[in-house]
Image 1 (cartoon, one colour):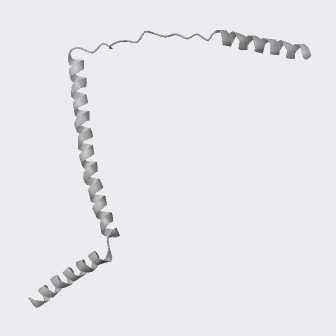
Image 2 (cartoon, rainbow, N blue to C red):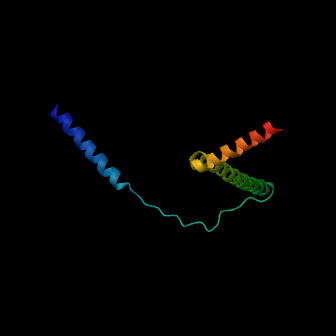
Image 3 (cartoon, rainbow, N blue to C red):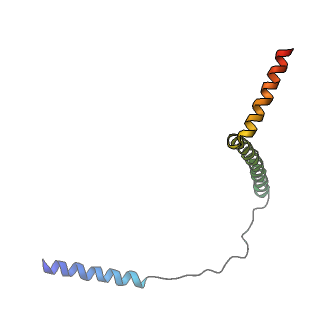
Length: 101
């Protein structure tokens, strides 16, 4: 039993040593510029990039509108009581003018 244990230890150490020796670093020269597609492929991807840009602009505009709407909505809920009182007064005045007619 001890012989088998010793054999496994020797094999394990040998694998560790071999694994450490196989570390190889390679460095490739950097490419200056990747080749581009010519013909319909480049036109397709240029058009696709343009549409993606338009979509991003549209989403940005919609996001700004939505932020403004939410800001207005939360400002109503967080506003002072004075504004609510003014609103109540104007509503009462409108009701009174309707009743007079």
